[in-house]
Image (cartoon, rainbow, N blue to C red):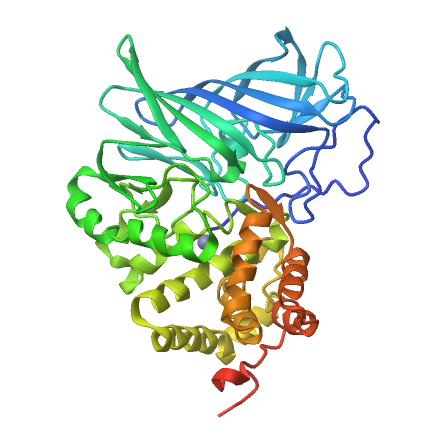
Length: 477
Ligand SMILES: [Zn+2]
């Protein structure tokens, strides 16, 4: 995917003491997230036009002020804001590019729980002049349906929010559509009710969620269900014409969930499932409790990788969704781990030799001189060292996974899997940094040499060797 680059840097911008900062402190996305408050809960209540392009409704954001606030920001691009209230009282607001600047009638005191309601409408993904922005995350209307895929910064295109994983919150989503449609979203599907000739679907995400993992999917679906051995309900939303084929492609999710509970610990959420949008996507996204795929996962099988990708998105629910990278620079903590989970799933199915073959394949990809030169030229050879405009580069995924395998070989299986479970339990529903991971690996193993090993794998350009497997990055033939 290609994402909108933030053109404005806030470095050097000074704001008054009682104004919440316009960014939460992410080096790559200086205006994502905001300072001065901590969101507890979002209620998103939207009516969707029959052509799926236009939204009309409101969001209520319950938050705690973490400082005195005479003014604070939400992240929001485009559409039309009709009104803003804070604790039921009309508040002044201004639009400043991707920032919605709100001045409550009375200043908020540090520690106060306050409720902000923003009424808005319009076509998401367009600026206030009505010029189209290409789909680069956020709301996407397609023929006969709609989907939402927002990693990393698309949520602010369809609802005002504190758009950064550092501020997770619970969500209620109420989506109103024409009665021919169904809505699949995050968490538990709690109710459906009719008002006039419209249907409202209510979904409840009861565990904290980063904004970029919010999703809304509208279409006519065939819902197929399953359950993990641990009792987690699995609900899959498939396009009607593909449902039987899709059910086969997604058949092993319950087994995967059981297996990954053994690797990572208990599944963090109450529900799981996948939604297949009735459109070719060419990507998949780990939208919380309802992973998103396009028709192509079923129709093309992704070159034999469909099941592996399905495992990748499920694994993200422990590594990525529950334990999220604290900054977008730390993305490998999510993608490297989920890619390594693909290797673990292969090992579970076909044994260690098959997993080793996959590791060798990953290694060959990274050692390929053209790949290596390309990554180096873009300055992103090391997985913990991406750039903002090459965030989702292959080193983040592939070399990130190899770094974890190298760590496993150094630590031994027992210590490594103890470390993995501890990693997930320590940072459940929270965020962590690369340094946190290295510190924990050292703590669990008592092996200080892990610092140098991880430094070479994560921060230095040359591809390290994996001598235990006879893999040498510098060897030329
Ligand atoms: Zn991923």
